[in-house]
Image (cartoon, rainbow over all chains, first blue to last red; front, side, top):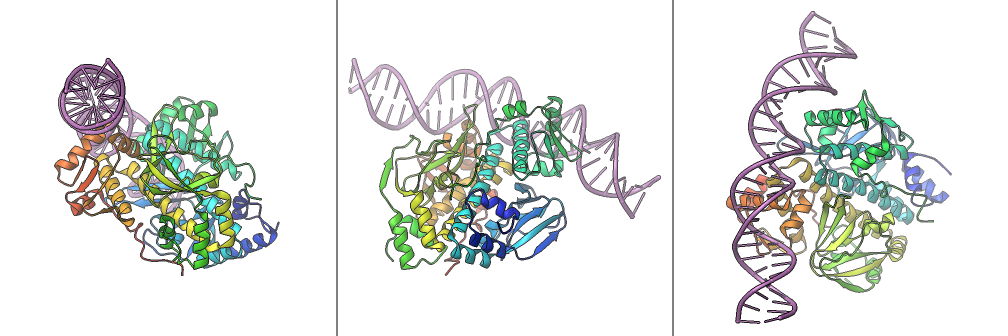
Length: 242
Length: 242
DNA sequence: CGGCGACTTGACGACTTTCAAGGAGCGTGG
DNA sequence: CCACGCTCCTTGAAAGTCGTCAAGTCGCCG
């Protein structure tokens, strides 16, 4: 094992990486950068040459509508890619904003594509990681399309918890969560006012409590049942490719 | 140019494929199969060894909720992948149903992964195609989260039109569309009844008319404006990788 | 202390769903 | 040939969910 960055941990879950592959991966980590909360990291329409891996902190990717509304597509937590799609499509179709101060490591497109050429299995691994991210977006889409506000919130908090647990940042008890009710509203397609009401409702039902930057699962099983939560699509036991 | 299947057309838009790459691609097309409308092609939870490229007809990918509701994630039109994510994740997190009778060509996972190893640029191309599909899902997500029923419908019909135009099946005048109002409802997160009302509304506003399996843009520019439609994320002029 | 951002709560109204009832087109079988 | 059943489309009325507007609290910081 040559290094143990979040990227290696993530891709390692899919393909068993050889030492040469690991060293190619290691060479991708150019420089480490930090960004402050709230200032966009990527702008919609911008043309990028670099993607990032989130090392610490939270970010979100969102789209702005002409009328000023915004829809948060996904939150990124440590280990996640930032702007991979922007790079591949050559133009960003969305913006990315750090929710907290974040640390990232930069990856240049050219390096990434060269790495694919040298070690094709890496390409497969990245494709897999991208598919996994897409599955998350799809689940979010189902939230917006077919769940009412309370189920949506419940499902969303559970999913976030499951993702955080995968990188050691959460458990069935709960997790630290830096999101404001405004951010939740933009993610869940609700108004901030309604987010507040729904949170109260879930708290009074003694299923989850979101307070002071911490999500506490008061009754995990009941919440899972209420939200119709399934984490099969996140379950991943060891590398598929050896 | 060795062949000119939908897959080649699609990937060719991203990378300029060499003859050896084209021949690897050609070898992927195992057998052609047909499926009848309505009978699932892939079941949620099923473990697949094959993905497909849609040659003719329409399909849709959807998720079922425990309470019987369903959310259609995306429609697939000729040239699109079917079940690529299922294959990569090793378990399908969604179902796929042919909307019409469809013809597909089968692609075995193992062949696909081998092809990646032989021609890494192919992997890059597929990654790009997957990113493009994801961009579509993201736009759909914004529809559900932040547009009201009429805007949502308008935006959806425009996007479908733009996608069809890319493969020569539609224009700014309109396109043949085999979707029922029930399918539209499941895609847009609305009730079938409301879909009907919204379609009437758009028809009476003389922007679009959806009747007898045909979407007619009565006033394309007005509709684009009404829906806040941007196709920048679909615009793709020639290969990015040479 | 005043200002500010995030959170709360109530009242009212708009957008959507649900419930109910019909109508039109089409293939099947008597 | 026509009735029947089925799917899809259409429309109205009542009921609910959720957004908007408005006002007020709390903690933090200059």
